[in-house]
Amino acid sequence: MAEIFVSFDYENDRNYKYTLDMWNKNPNFLFTYDDRSSGEIQTQSVSVVKNVLSRKINEATAVIVIIGKEANKAHRDRLLIGYKNWQNYEIAKAVELEKKLIAVQINSQYEYPEELLNVSAKRIYSFSQNEIIKAIRGL
Image (cartoon, rainbow, N blue to C red; front, top):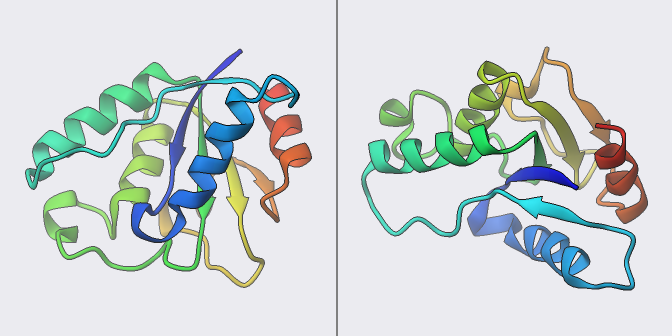
């Protein structure tokens, strides 16, 4: 079973994360992973969020990046984060820690997060259970 961190835009794409969680819990689905994602972090402190995310990404063997419509939208705290938004931070941290990346583009029109460009990642061009399972099994 793979240890997976899921990077997603909480405001806009959490339903996709919840779908992964449902697949993981359903014994009738051929989909299992050990979720290393953080729960919602209840703080306004950028440094606390960075520490939690870094620890969770470090615990994972791979990072699934759910690429939604707002994946490249600038976050209000981007200067403190050091990246355009939290997803870009998570991708950069995964690359730094040499984690495998699985990029799941919900819609082919959606732009990749900047930090996902020019890095090695398994790319999936729709939110497809079969494709995601194959990518995880191929780790």
